[in-house]
View (cartoon, rainbow over the protein chains, first blue to last red):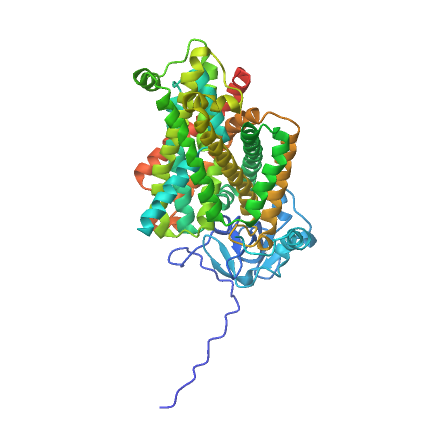
Length: 145
Length: 409
């Protein structure tokens, strides 16, 4: 009996068929409750930043306008966007500090990334402080004790 | 045997680390004006800090998340931002008071003007924060702080009428010379001094620094439940010393030298030497704790890398915040403000900021996502709710009472 290669069924065109019923749908994440304002850790568990906001897009890549459209989280946002969450308004897209959702490997009590925090835009202030202040003080690059 | 030593060390450092300039000053002032009639406020504060410090430590040990990360996550950016600003400013005020306390204690020991000691003290705090290992700084200051037990010894040496002392503590009455508003103002100050929020930030972040896991919870519970009440007993013995020496003479304590006077009277030079070492250790230890807490709160709110277990270059924002706070604190002290007055304000403002810190801890301690099967039991939740009501009442009453009494004058 020759092994039969069964062709995989093609991906349906109407992909954004997210579960309409929450029952039995596995783990449901509430963006506000489980994502916003959580600590983001890098692949070595080093804190990167806090998840200040989310960029949510509709399935065709457009901006989300109503609550009814199926949508997905495209980017984690941080940086100046925090101030606008406190005081209202919205920073221009050029001022967003983004981390792609594709880098996220785990969502628990913190959001864990699969990349190192060192090279990310989100940590540039820390890098600047390190290179211009902390590393110049004697002992700044050594282990305590 | 090693484990037993660990427990003993933990308890001893908890006792020695319990007292800071706020407890020293507030208890002495209260003793000199109200006798032992505010013992209940100290006891309430001690039960409260045991309850919530233990809870915060447990949350961190189980979930790995420190208190201000939890505050941010639960309250959102607005409410937690408000809490951050309030806690940070109060913490800065406390830090200023503690460094001032170090300088005043060194002045008592050396007769060198405090303004010469302030930069030295601030620099010493920075060097320790910059270079020393977390465990070392905690243990050394805690153990040296144990010399404050001389306050308890002094109470015995002063040979009080124990029955009378116990009676005034057990059946409190507002002294005829004082108004009810001042009485409750100082009750809030004592409560705030015992429950200062920085202790919880420090305690929970310390759990991360020392890499606690669920296994370490029982040890931390012993430290807190034995160490803090004994620390509270020390607080009460400071009040008792002031009660015995100053209350009959109608002298109101307003300087640090008056705080130590009863000890000198009871035990002479040797006791004085002990108490000075103790005050330097206690205020220096609390300076370290408040400096670190300033870094912890800001770094955790913004999600930066923090911790003394990392090299400074791996937690740059954290260290910059601490350096800035030390510079500001020392700068403020150089303007010749009275550290004792700064202390009195810092403990009352602490009481104002308490609810926003303790509510999120209680919420998360009941969240199975964080705690798994280690969520709070019913008894603990009941007690914590009672305390939350008390904290809220103290927080709401603090500012009106401060205005009404002219800050307790």
